[in-house]
Length: 439
Image: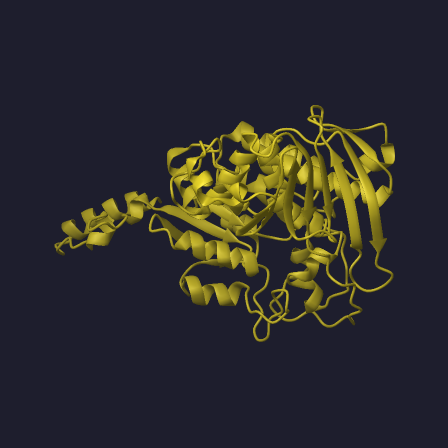
């Protein structure tokens, strides 16, 4: 039963039995409050480091009510989240934050079956992204989905098509898409302030060190089988590789090239007008693999992407972390929140203020409220599905190129690798039974 129906029926029943019909002003939407019947009911799936933050931000919007929580980690005691392996998250922690009376689930499908859930926040390991998102679409939910949107290119194509055919609202956790200084800088570059862009250099974090960790017993309260889901089953468990550091394992993700590439390559695509396209050729310049330890991601990597417009983009963990644009007239280096340039005029805030804002933003709200805006008015979000799909595709092509250790050619219109059967096989992955992708 929807909240608006519940409130109306409850008021009627109270009147019939003779009780005074006293409903708080907040329940009626008075005094600047949003009535429960008008709130967007959100279910949160995945309550680790990022998922808990996302849910807090959504809950801070007065138009939102968190009505369900889901995570496979319901353990007590010491947790191992965060880069330092010392932070506490998971389902028990989420209940303390969002309410002990909020219904909780181990299986996301039970949450999706709830009729009162309007939208879901999904922040899981990457190998889960496509299955959960497409199941949410089939359940009629709008989705705030974390980046990178899928583990494989084929999953991305299926998810993109499912979103577009369903009419659901999709927003990706590419927060820079709603940050004014990012939009203004992209506008400045697109407007030709640096002249024709020839090259872009992107610096990403290094992958996690390949530590050697002994197997330990799976703690009570953690559904290790469900955590792995469609990935190959492993009996090897250690908390230091499971919470956050799962990004060091290829069965669960593509590593930092997709994790941080989803931010920085996305920004580069925005500035050079490649939101709905992609590279033509991807060349691995350097790759060094771990010799032992739990991580099977490269310890060093450098990949170049060549686009139809003549731009070369290099991504590496050895570059300065950020995005540097090299044009005919000068250069600009963007590092989150700061700029340095070959000429002072390129970092002058007054110049930014005068730009025409070629890339519109949803008012002055933050990324999460912008999602709720779109859930309510059904307008496309700032990071609608095609944009992150194209960004993620390029990042995954970089991963494929350094796996086969040779240049690969890509057709961005047909979305296929050209003339390389081995590389093409990396565009998809088999799922462990019984999991399937219900596209």
